[in-house]
Image 1 (cartoon, rainbow, N blue to C red):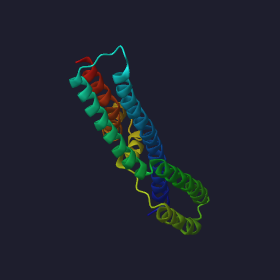
Image 2 (image 1 turned 90 degrees about the vertical axis):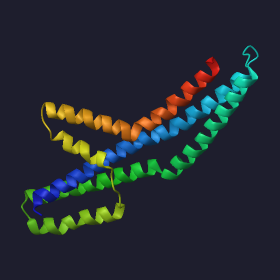
Image 3 (image 1 turned 60 degrees about the vertical axis):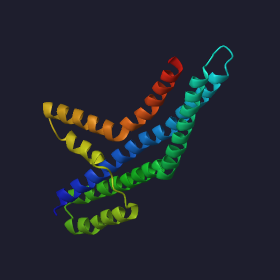
Length: 192
């Protein structure tokens, strides 16, 4: 592999790692706020039953109890799953890896500009060492945004919209559903 291809490979890898770090940081924020919101839903529904001016039929109280138990169970499950995922730690690892690869890229780019191919090949080995050190695999979406940036004109617009839709479906949709669906169900139980 020639010097330009190797530099391009490192650039793509560290760029994808920065993208992965940003994506995981967003996911970590959702993993913090969703359990908090679900807890508020459970508390609000239980407090609602205790309000003196709010009369509930025994059937409605049973539905509210079933709903809050189900929501509490969901809360425990997602807290356990997300707690074991270590998303914030993974984000930091991706970021640290990207920083080290960026430093290596800058160093190798300087060596390449001086046309010292022997030193370049010797220093390039550090790229493989970084790959082994961090042992991280970013998602396809983290790399895809890099490819999109090379597209020009209207094709860029279409590619970017496709990427955003794919990103939303893969990374955010379920989290938004976890926020909105319990709220709608709770309101439905109260109103009907």
